[in-house]
Length: 344
Image 1: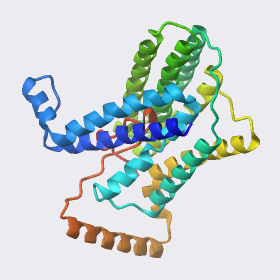
Image 2: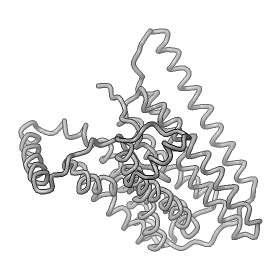
Image 3: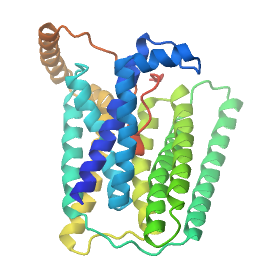
Image 4: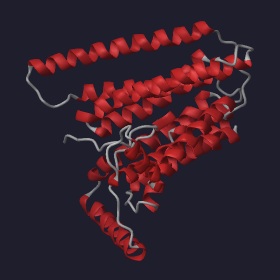
């Protein structure tokens, strides 16, 4: 269990840090295209090339972790990628972190320890190809409901001639992307389970291909939500929905079970809860800090800026702008592209 958790942490660190390095490398690069000159420019850029390799290596480690442990363990732990990314950004990109960031990182770390201590090795339950179809039908039905709800609110917004997105629209896009990110891990795990039950080895590449489609579609929905909506709402909903989907689908579709001992169940449930709360705190920290008393906020800001100035003077490193980030899992995995507009 601990081996798979360590693999998951390494995988999600590779995914998220790799995307930050790619983002940093693209600052001086032209828009990506299939032209040979452009491809050479990207391949010759050290930060981008290193980030790309880390991203690919992280994806391979995630597949290995899914082959060893239940998806209801791997998916929540992968949510700690945002905590790892925050620490990396603090020390490498010299970005200032507030008190809620550190609390979120601590909660995610303690939650990971709880999941590792409470998780148990499980014998794979018997599943059939029809469960994959059943899972697809459930997700399709859920998307029909969400899109119908979205269509209603869009029509109301047009009728009232409102330009701003409603919060319900931001929530729906976040939920849709999070569900697809969670399903990507579940479908990948299904491929390994099928092979363990004696099915053809072709189920692994087939399920991985479906998983890639789920992640790509989830990224599409997430980008739509981030384009006009608030990143804080879309990111939070995506992160939580990804973890919940991995846990619920793993238990109902793959037959994964809670630990048999009461202490193991308690540790696992507390671990899930702490990881989700930690991720939510990391995503919402910039908003929460505004609600602190002004005197406390000013004193914290002054001390942080003083420490930050000292680090900059010592290292002479220019601070890079932090891109919008949320990591699913499987991939959080996917929000480090363009900074998003926020509405007050």
